[in-house]
Image 1 (cartoon, rainbow, N blue to C red):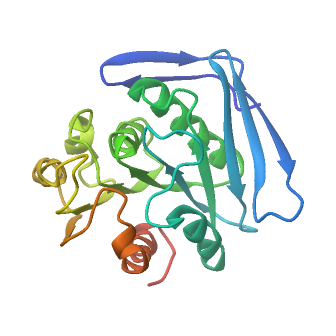
Image 2: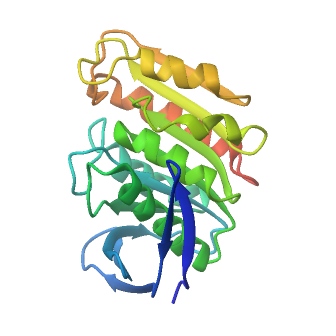
Length: 232
């Protein structure tokens, strides 16, 4: 049991009751499936456990649904690579992928699951809508030390200013994004406080596929730099 939770998302107070988590090993896979059952439905996750980890990272996608990931399977590569640094990872599948509030609830549930596994410091990575989702989720939990927003929308990111001094934020966008303008990340960056970093890739679209290799290095380095007790 993860217990009950109450969070505020985009000025909406949400209460989550009767939380229970079931973990199921997946033969031949690098992850276990975790189903988090609540009175709002079941949130499904992929859990990449690092033995003895005290740090964890939650990764979420955009409105595409499923286990959405940008940059040519960035999330699965990160999840497996972070194990070498004793960092557990959890990929979250939204129940309602176009809904900011419900997607944030899913993300917070993933964070609570990691915390139930003895993780005390959390990093969040989100793409597109997921950029706003991870900023909202970070505002609800002081365990969050790092936020990475990729090709983020500006709507729903207002709480970023409140992360000052608590969570380091990395914003990444492509200047050829025809889905969400890179000016959205610039706007979020202006409202954020240090530590913060903005990377704009030239000639790169919304999914960031063109810069997948360098993006992996950039995101992993930011996580390792700002999660406690890790080395770069």
